[in-house]
Length: 87
Image (cartoon, rainbow, N blue to C red; front, side, top):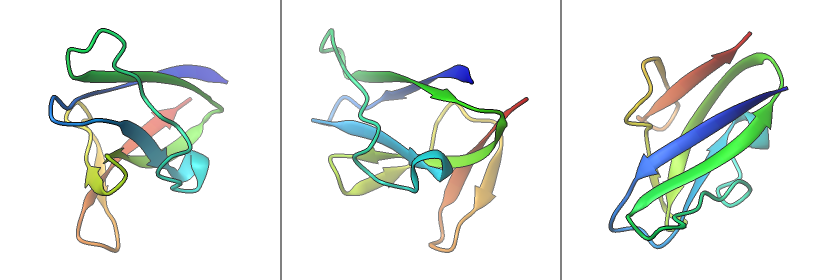
């Protein structure tokens, strides 16, 4: 597996998690942390090789695409999921 760092600037958020193919899109399964209180949420997941779609979940209800991602695909809800490929 490979350590993947997820980062989302979200100054207005109380909590942020990452949801995707790797955790069956559970919006609270992979919480990120804002340890220094600057509004930038960070977390690391270990993922096996593969291709994964994901989004961030802000405050348990708002789905946000990764502003740093370079690859996306449309989902069935009118959003764009970031796509991460691990070789």
